Length: 132
Image 1 (tube, rainbow, N blue to C red):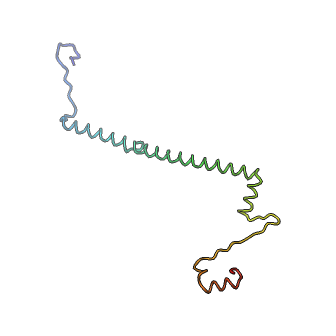
Image 2 (cartoon, rainbow, N blue to C red; image 1 turned 90 degrees about the vertical axis):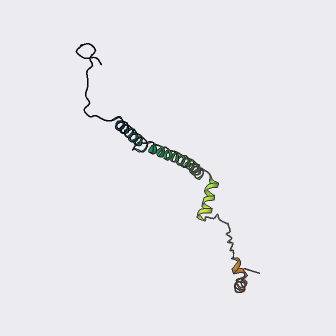
Image 3 (tube, rainbow, N blue to C red; image 1 turned 30 degrees about the vertical axis):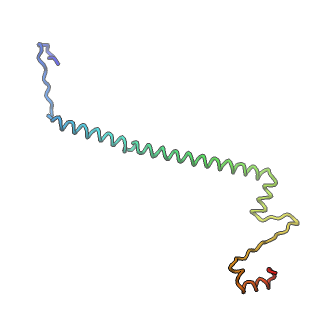
């Protein structure tokens, strides 16, 4: 830079407040860049948090889709229960045990194989008239 006073080609010398060797300056610059990089990757709004948030959003979208499908099925079932007599009758019979007048109920009793093979159990079954 030329002199501010216009006296030819003399240069104005500027003194540094702190003299630092180039190696120390380079190490300081690298340390600052590494710190900025760490903050960019690991910080509060870093790349790791961003990737975690994206993964969480993907999982939540999948859950939302699943719940919307289930909601649609339940809505269809509600409509059937409101207006379809056959569905109302089926639910009343299966879940609540309702019967029409004149219906007969048959109970099927299954006997475990180990109990059926024992002699004492076979005699008890014969006495009750369950086995011929």
